[in-house]
Image: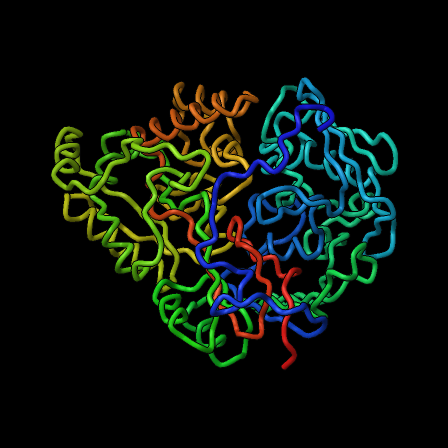
Length: 515
């Protein structure tokens, strides 16, 4: 490839657990049909679309945004980049400059031209030091974005970063550009009334209920707009979502429980899509909050957990335990990192050495699934002498913002799948990162994270992230639960659900049989 610093399609290993390109029984997918409506039910609400208004995005927000904005590139089954809004991305030999070439003739949904000037205005807003820097922290190496002409953007970095190119194929607020004039004048409407160049337009947003999308008449690729309408409904209880998909009230049940996956696997009237990813469900620990500022207490918490019991009781055996973010199928997998496994005697010994009573508060959510895990943890920790209070907060901004502020002790969280591990570790665990929500500060962690971020050598990066995993297992700023396991249950009429990378269901690729 020209300008040799290209790292096309660098994807940490993940695999499809149940192939989505096949009908039940292994038959090939039929020819796509156009038209119809798809309704998907989710357990959390969409937060908004302006990176200067919100501080973090849940998957529901990302899935909605992907419909409105699309990507510069999508990824095929092999994890290779496929042109979408852009046609090419080329890096300079020193890794300090990247040229993004936009598809000629692009338009926003309101009919205005989509140009390099809209893209650079978007990045100027993100990098504005006087504004919310939550998303800017993920691209701290970006010095500036320059419009070379109407279809060419030059990104200039302060230092080479291998992972930089992967942001252009990741659904994210970082690349969701709106018309420059609209960005300058819309104010709060940027968050609630987005204008993008993606395949669909948001036509209705009923708070606490649903969001509706219809075809963007100005989308560059009308042949890819199979559905006439898409509705994302908010149904917080998994039981309600399962009932709705079984009765046909919805077409897609997003994020079912393990027992529901097992039931649907044995059903002739439902389909299951499953995907094991490269992240993990976790418990974040605020290492600045006593008694959790003492590593002995954090280690004791981990040794006291019988994770196999949680997997069986809370998830009905669906999934696999994690010992690092990157599982056995991943390019970045590091075996034998020394993660603490169930050993209550060792937990009691660490607490005895600590020598003071230990009481912790576990931040959870008032859902049936989360309640089971929270009560199990409370039981495990109480058995070794730790007093535990469960603080339930409704999922969404209230839950997320408490963690981002550091107003928590232990909280259920997740390390999501992303195209490069740098995005998983730098912002969350580098001591000087504004997104270091565990407040961990350790020279060895920083050294490993920095080496993984700056080196273009894949071998150096693998060793760095292995060192990171081993140090994390010693310091325990997080406790690992299960490897990322994403699934959806659908009606038989739903076809072509792509792999759930990062847990995202790209609804714009779906088509349905007519009812």
